[in-house]
Image (cartoon, rainbow, N blue to C red; front, side):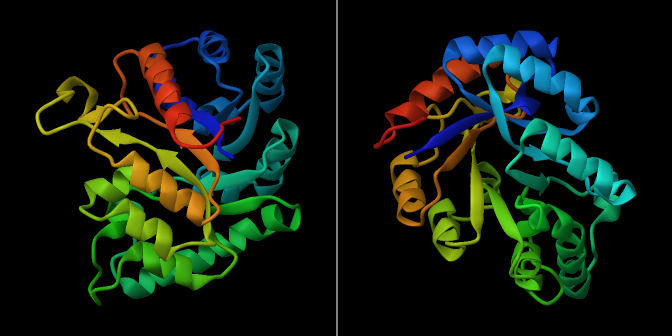
Amino acid sequence: MKHVAYQLYGSRNFPPLERTLTMLAKTGFTAVEGYGAILETPEALKTMLDKSGLSMPSAHMGLAEIEADPARALATAHILGLEAVFVPYLMPQDRPLDAAGWTAFGKRLAQIGAPFQQAGLKFGWHNHDFELQPTDSGALPLDLIVAADPRLLLELDLGWVRVAGLDPVAWITKYAGRIATVHIKDIAPDGACVQEDGWADVGHGIMDWTAIHAALQATGVDHYIVEHDNPSDDARFARRSLASVNSFQGPAI
């Protein structure tokens, strides 16, 4: 059984948010994933979600925002009915410089995630490709983050795994039991979709979704979040991507 949601970051250039939510509901989505700025007024956001008939099972929250006011971050999660929170990114100047630093960062994540987990939410890290570049020791930052604390989960972004030159299926298998959700993101063939930063609608790029879906189902991962970092038409992306995900073997809800 697949639970399919839409990462709202892909529609940030197509305001207002109410339009996006209405479009997604009409397209057939029942859930979305939140991020950053749109979480600043959670009561108003919850009202819009309810009006559109959409839920928000997960969201991205910035590390600095959580650390600055953990009580507010947790309250936001409760207001929105979140089931999972993921820290999504580190700016280049904030990234650890060596293996020891990445291990320490993983422990820091686990510490700030503890209140969420104690409240019954899942908590973890969403990757890009920089965590998949070897450190001074040869270890990969993502491995060091996961190894730092068994409570940390992953929102594995499969598109960024492929951009890093790695096999998404192998990484799904590697972290079976530690993956809470995945970002379903496709990559255009070389030279295509340049105006969209080389990303593609799901099912219209180079990713092997048959193998990926089989690996996800085999490891018990059933929360799929479609994402495109820079679509020129978010309605087109939503429509074509949902159709592709629904064509994966097995029902979607």
